[in-house]
Image (tube, rainbow, N blue to C red; front, side, top):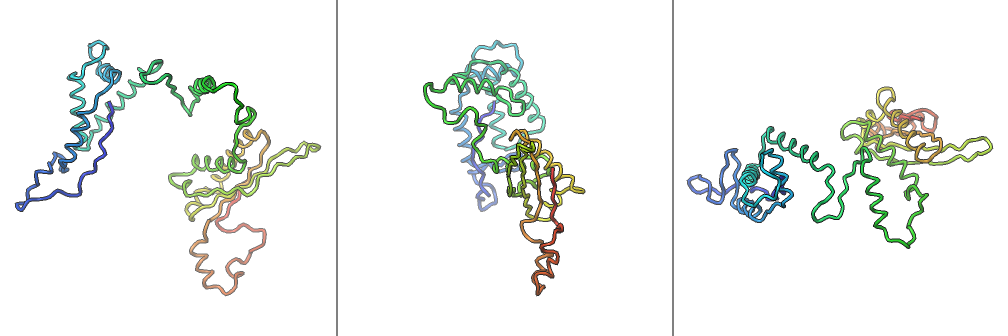
Length: 301
């Protein structure tokens, strides 16, 4: 049983009488939280109108493990009423113990096991359970959609077309996906992936059909650059290697991936030097020379 929680925010405070006692429009719970009369009314209306389906009632009874049969349970079922009262109380107190959370999780696990192999769902002609991690159920869903497609009409996309997205967008999403996998916490969400080059060399005489990819990982601050580069450049090399394998499989051709980590904005130290300098060469003396700048790392795979 998991009814929708009432979306009613509590007031910041309750009106007090001249003697300092709480007004009758607020009730104080055991947890110290004041529940307004509006909340009481909203919760009461929710549970007065809430009518669980026969399938949900039967599932609740079966999860209790009692000896009662699995026929449809009436609305006045005592077990169901006790569950609703408990949920109503928790909605008012906005609290649940760790034991109650563990019991609910166990009930949902048991429910998932009981629902395996169920074919008929009231109100639906077909229900599909799919997994993006294992691919389970994808074929059944695809076959159902093909059966429901209207015959005699031309398909919008060719069967030979893998995707309608631009190669540069595929490269950007691929690099960012591996940043999400390999970088800690919130670091990948502040990155900007820019694809500068995506070129295919077609030298059939030399047997060279490689694809060259260059992408920049633009970092908002110095901490992000350090995380992207990693100790000795290990992290950015891992990102480039993983992207190379995925893009080679996607493009069906050998792929060379070059990644560059750089700062979106100059550091504060560089900004101070630029303000104090009279000549640009004083800040960047090696500008235009083939040397690697601080905070800039290049990895090629």
